[in-house]
Length: 174
Image 1 (cartoon, rainbow, N blue to C red):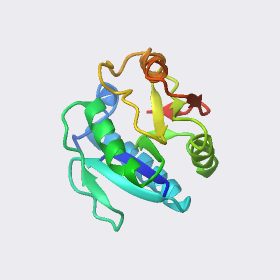
Image 2 (tube, rainbow, N blue to C red):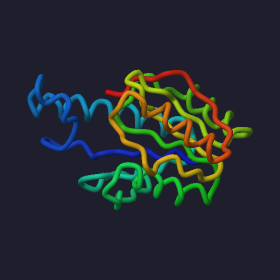
Image 3 (cartoon, one colour):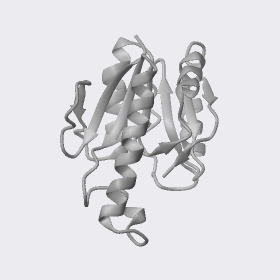
């Protein structure tokens, strides 16, 4: 069973998008994050794949399976959610603040996972917004996030571990 992990910070005023705080009010940031979150979640549920929300913050109030993110480190939290869900089949994990994600991109990610171990959707900032796996590969430990070489270092780590890697089209991470 293919699973989409919606790796999300539950939209709340004062909880999220710290990079935008110098230019926008907390209320403006909340409205932006809420819109991104809702739009992407709708796109994901419309694909027909199983969607599980791994959330940080307040527990979401909808009927999808929701699991709290427990670890402190971002890499550990992503690894934990993939390790849990990959037992059921291939997994695509994505953040909640992405632009350029549609059903075709999701289909392509799962298609690539039929013969690749790991897929990434590069983000314009040098990181990635989607990581997918058909078997768990530790690409998360010893990675410093929020740097322009995150994707490069992560792909290198996957290849060093003997994994086959594919890249999806570049998306925008807000």
